Length: 194
Image (cartoon, rainbow, N blue to C red; front, side, top):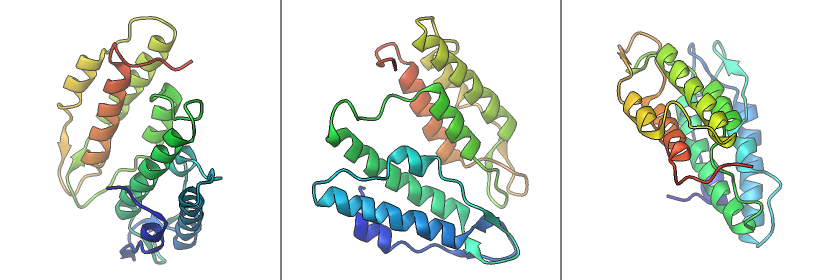
């Protein structure tokens, strides 16, 4: 479901106390920029905020003061990124987002934060596989056969150890999405980045 500027302005997140959250002012500032960018798009203009900027945004962590729930913010920002990617695709073919590349995969991997209080994937296993995927993407752009291949990557992504709720684990939906995007980029019919 695509989000618009009104949806961004209406966003509300659960507050955190005594557990890690995102700095509220920093999140609000990014959401203000995102809403303004989507307003520009609705008016037929080119926004000054890109999906990649939202994707690479970092927020100060809070623990002993109120913050926003990290998972809720991350999930919402994924929707904002998707909306801006659609916009990027409509601006022009030259400005359309490139297929997933190694550097982008590494940025998204760095954004992953282990969480407790819910099952997740073992962080070491995820990091290992996605680093291999980034290397494979680099190999593919240089004209070499990637290893792991798209099929091998997709199969390995189904074998992560699920952590118990009390142990740190990475969000399964986010990781599954990254593995799927990396596998799509490694598929033989996928366009290679310049």
